[in-house]
Length: 518
Figure: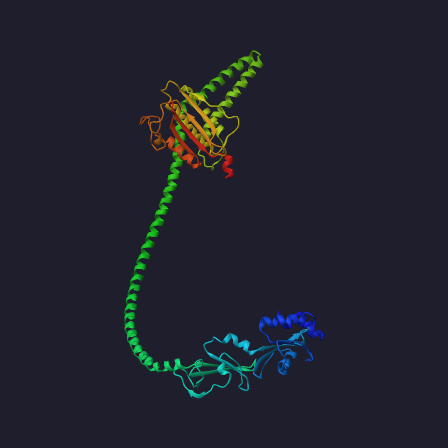
């Protein structure tokens, strides 16, 4: 906030009287800014108060009138050996109209304090030519022995005002006089710059011009040689560009041909992959049919036995009805129904096992899968005199898979265990279902008491088998097919030899609840 906008100053100008705190305010600002005098006037130009370090000289009317009209007024006062600058600022009322004026009187000597070390001689003169302020005391009066001459400096257009001085060691002998009017404060700024360096440099201009001419000639020759080299380089680059374009075109054709060949190869590979998938599906189906073929004798026995029993119960039932023993005949009919249901269940399992499953993997009860396989393998297990250790879980165990394909995997493992234990003294098949870890996969274990695996690392290789070649035991594809089926469900199947003898196969499948959460 400026001093003219201070509330105490505005109040004093508006009321025409100075308050008790305005004199200390003026003194603080005067001490801080180096102001000699502070005057306050009302809107009519009447002096209200003043603070001064000495006497109160008369205030020029021009800056006061400017301030009372709402503008900033500046003037200088030179006389009696004193030089002062008077700055008048309007003091505005609340409606922005001038309510008075504040006039500050500054001694020019205070202004000159900050210029004393400037390398150039500077002075400010008023309209009458009187010096108001300068950084050289010798310039307060017209320079003694000054001779004004007109001269043209080399390298500068027009003519310049040169002064030849003889005014002591702090002013140049030959000075270039420059001036610029400052209408806002009513002064003219003048600079007396030392012209000796410029005059000394003038003597060097001829040598410089000559050197430049020689240099220009050398540069011209160098440029001509450079143009020749550049032209040769451009021609060489043009030839290289043509060659590069030809190579790019050739390479583009080669890449196009390679891309076409690659597309053909991709199409061939895709077709081969589809053919392989069809072959795998056919192989899986052939494996299931081969397993059914191996079990055909047992299946015939399983179906023939209930048929014979049904015939016997039917004949006995007829005789019992003829003798009037209806209650006993009803029991025979009940047995006939149970045997027929058993035959229907066997045929339904066989038909489901033999069909080609194409549905995607979903929720499957692993306990029901094991039950179905054991029911279908009842006859082979009985013929080989194999004891089954199967502590059936009370609740269903849901896993991610396909029902028919999981039946084929378990059937392959059960059939291999039966074949491995035929020549053994102890024939026992252990089946367990367990949780690997909380929230982890479900594991199915099948352990037998056979001789074990000759090479556990190769049991899942296609066509690997320890059975006789050409026999009826198969081609060694059962475990390979089972490996592919389990992999397609995101599971894992492994085989190993047990420390106490026999082999164990484990099938890890994703639990249905964990798979849905993932």
